[in-house]
Figure 1: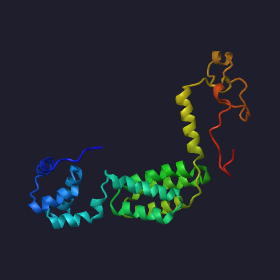
Figure 2: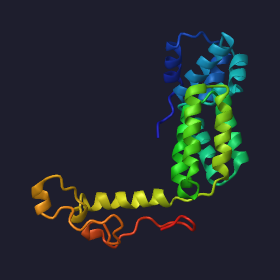
Figure 3: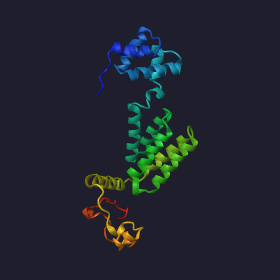
Length: 238
C-alpha cells in the first residue's frame, strides 16, 4: 500500500499543475486528497474544466459531479462494474439497471460494459441459456455501430435479458479444470486413433486407425482416461 504524501510533497506536485490557489482552496484540497496526489490533481482538473477556475466553491461543485466522482481508472470504476456483474449474476435486474445507469451517466465506455456482458454470457450463464451469448454479442455490435446516447438502450436490453437468464458455470469450470491438468501434466500424448494421418508413414504407424465418428471410447490421453471435467447441470445434457 502506498504511503500518503506529506503536505510539502503534495504542495510541490500541485504547484507543477500551474493553477493558482488561495490558502482556503489549498487547505480544502489538502483535506480532500488526504495525501493522495492523484485525487488532488483529478479534482483540480475537474473544477478547472467544468467551471473555468479553482475555488472552494467550484471544488465543492465538482465533487458533486458524477463525471468527476466516477474516475475511469479509480476504485469507483471497478466497484461499479463489479456491482453490475454481481447483480446480473444474482438475477437482480433492478440492481443491474441502477449500476448500468451510473456507468452510462458517468460516460463509461459502452464497449467496456458490453465486453464484460459478453464474458458474463459464457462464464455465468453458459449452457443454461445458450442464446445469452448471441444477445450479448449483438449488444456489443450495436454499441460499436450506434454509440452514445442511443446504445445505452441496447445495454439496458442486454442487462435485463442476462439478469433474467438461468445461470450455470459448468462450461467455465470444465475449462478451468482442464487447464489445471495441462499445467500439471503438460502435453500428454494424443491417442493414436484420433491423430491426424496425412502421410503414408503415419498411416503405417496406425495414426487414425480405428477411428469412428460416434466412438464411445474415451479420446482423453491415457493418464486422464477417467477424468471428467464437464459436469452438466440439469437439462444441459451429458
